Every structure is written in structure tokens, then in C-alpha cells.
Length: 557
Image (cartoon, rainbow, N blue to C red):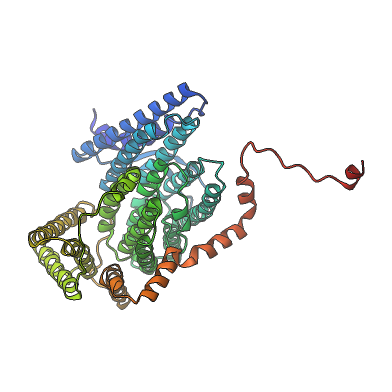
């Protein structure tokens, strides 16, 4: 193998991954058991090959194969300043990590679907759509330029739309899928517009060229400022953020593997485009503040609403909305490496949560052997302050400083609140020995986090914008608002709920259970903007047509 070919080997292998998965689903789905068996074997085998290729590409990358892959350039408009549109695959640590993650999740979902849909008359069509959706999304995570990313995420949206409406005889599912498509297509238009603006200004749509252009200019042109805001708005819509979150909660009539694929992968496309354009968004600055504010609002509302839901999948969906809000908050604060770590961890967790959701009801039927006691306010404050001291000590051992990284202050409070929940839960029923064990667990979890934090900060430094060392007064206000928001959520989920007046508690429960009623207005507006398609799609297929009313002449006859 020549040195030039070896340098491109990992990129060529990455390029082969989506091609293999899409090719496995290309023939039109046929009816019958034999066709269904062939489809599910082919798609399942393709996902296994995809994971193997992703791991092989990572190994070659570690050995020095790190050149991006460029296919023949596609000519496009632009007059004298033509835009170069190469079909390129980015070869870096982030794309390799995401390719391996998506391939693994896709493989698990495909294998789970074999049993889940066994005997279904439409399983061949399901596996065809699963292969197409997974293949296009694999192209999303490894695209080397804005044009290919936008094209791939648009194609992913179209095939996902068919999966979400898999059961076409369920009108409610079709209506919610239609509402989702309105937001998704709007986000696609925003991305296309941002792509054109970036290409006309930079002269190239490669993510590496955008990063280089930003590094060479202390002041961004107006076109790039507008493009940054469009990208952030697209990320908000793609991530189902408040108040556009309703479709993510309601689209639960699709097969469970579809919910797992969406919640463990595709819904992160908004966060992925922010990560890929982090240098541009960091140079703009203000667009990220909007992203953080929307993420924080979604996090607070969804975290509280989640506790009021009785349906398992609805609770999981609200949990996804909250975690996506948290992820966008991290991105808005400039904690790009932390957001990437969060994406990986939550993707694996959510895939397992949805695929195992059928067993939750069995867990709820188990007898309650613990006798819970109320945790005092002093214990809650003591647990929080103790975990905050642990987080401060561990961050110091890892060489992290609030002076060098001001956003670390919010991060320390969040970690302290998260680990304090472990101790407080055991305090409500455990013995002294169990409390000591919970404290040791909290220390261990904090240590693991800071190790991963350091690894991701250094390991993905070339692909992500660095942490800001100097913050404006607006950013400090955002950090303070973040700390206050997390403290309020932790208070309402813990001692505040127990000490609330019963009448106020009941009223708050009702309002939160209904999602503060915001989605109802958004839904009405959506159907007002595009009502005809809803009426057409919600008709049950193969239903007998309605009889036409007889005319006066027919009646007399």
C-alpha cells in the first residue's frame, strides 16, 4: 500500500459505511415472509459490517491514516465567485467517534427489531426504511462540508418521516408526524440558507475551510453572522426545544425501535451541526447565548414535567427533551467537549432505555421493601455542599481552574447537585454503612467524570473551539442564571416538593402534566399553516369511500 493510499484508507472506509447500509435497503420491499427474512438479514448484516468498518477506520486513524477524502467537485452557482461543492468525508476524532457510536446503536436496534417485528406483514418495508434512515444519518456524522451535511440530514428526515408514520392506520400518529415534518423542513430551509451564505462568503463549504476563515478574521462579515444565527435556529428546531418540543413527546405510536433510533441518534443532529461549526458560532458569540437560554428553559420545564408523566414512553420522551436542552446549554456556554461527551453517554443510555422499556412495568410491580423517611433541609444542604467540595477538590487535582475556565463554576454546581442525589436517596432509607457507600460512589463518579472531561477536552481539541478564557458580563449573567436554574429544579424535585402547600402542589402538578399547555397553541398554529396535508394523510388507507349525497332529482326518482 502506497503512503498516499494509506493516508486516505480510514476516510475511504468511512465512506463505505453509509454506502453499504443504504445499499442493503435499496431494492423495493416485497411482500411475503421470504422477502421479509431476506431484508432483515441483509440490513442486520450491513449494520454489523458498518460497526466493524468504523472500528477499523479508528484503528487506521491511530496508526496515522488521517487524510480527508474528497470526491469529484460538483459545480454550483455563484457567478465569478463560484462555490466549490466537493463530496468529502472528514477524518478526525469526532467523526470517527460518532460513526462508531451510530453504527453500534444501529446494529443493536436492527437486531432487536428482528424479534420485535417478527410476524408483522410490513416488516420488509420497516427494515428497508431502517436501513435508509440509518445510512443517511451515518453520512450526516461524517460529512466533511455543509452541503453534504444538509443534504444528508434532509434525506434522513424524509425516511424518518416514513418510519414514524409506519402504522398508517393510526390517524393521531400521522398527524403528529406531519407536525414534526413542518419543523424539520423549516430547519432544512434554514440550513440551506446558511450553507449558501457561508459558501458565497468563504468560497468553500468545507468545515475545515470555515474554521480557517474564522481564524484569519478578527471580525466576521455580516453574512457569517446571519449564517451563525440560522444554524442555531435550525439546531433548536432539530433538537425539539421548547416550544417546538411537542412532536417529540407525542410521536410514540411508531414501533419501539424507531423511538430508540430517534431518541438515541437522529434527534442529536442539531447538536452535531453546532459541534461541526463551533469555531464559527464561538466567533459570533451572541447566537450561542440564544442557544443556551432556549436549552436552559427546555431543561427546567422538561425536567419537572417528566416527573408528572404516568406513561413510560412519555416520561422517556420528556427526559430526552430535558437532556437535549442540557446539551444545547453546554454548547451555548462553550463547553463543546462536554457536550460531545454528554451526547455519547446519553445516546447509549437512551437506546437501552427505550429497547428495555417493556420491562419497566415489571419493575413497578415489585414490592416496595424500603421505608422512606423525609430528608431534612439541613441534610439536603449538607449533601450539596459536601459534593461541591468534592467536585472542587477533584477539579483542582485534574489541573482545572475557575480562573482559566469561568464556565467551570456552573459545571461544578451541576456535578455537585447530580452526585448529591445519590447520597440523598440513600439518606431517605439507608443505614449509616449504606450512606458511607453512597458517599464513596459519589466521589468515584465525580472522579470518573473529571477524567473523561480532561480526555475529551484534549482529545478533541483540534475539532472543537477552545473554551473562552474571558467572558463578557452577559456570559457571566448566563452562568449565574444556569446555576440558579439547576438549584431551583433540584429544590422542586427534592425538599421543595415535600414542603409545598398541598393546593399549590396540586395545581402545579396539573399544569406540568399538561406541559404548561404551550404545545396546544403551537399545534394549532402548525395545522393552520398546513392543514390540507393533515386531512389527506389521516384518512385510513383502503377505507371505503364515503357515499356522495344524492341530488334532489335522484331523491324524486
